[in-house]
Image (cartoon, rainbow, N blue to C red; front, side):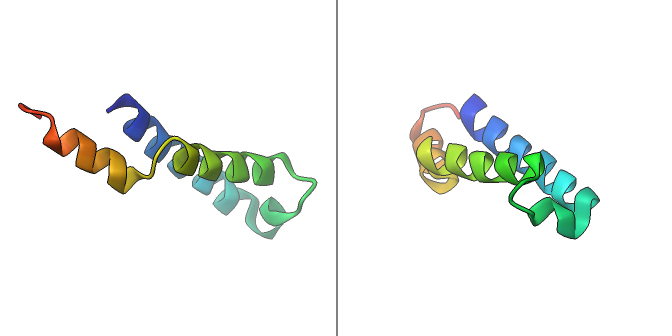
Length: 62
């Protein structure tokens, strides 16, 4: 549950940073762009949200 929550939270935070920086957030030299790429990799490499949700839904009592 923690991995699913943390992945969603960090994507929401980085998306807010991209919105704040506007077009300059997408420039390759910008640190925000690097964090955006890293958070996408974290959520995909750690297991897709849908898969983690399915696993959690099969746990009894959840």
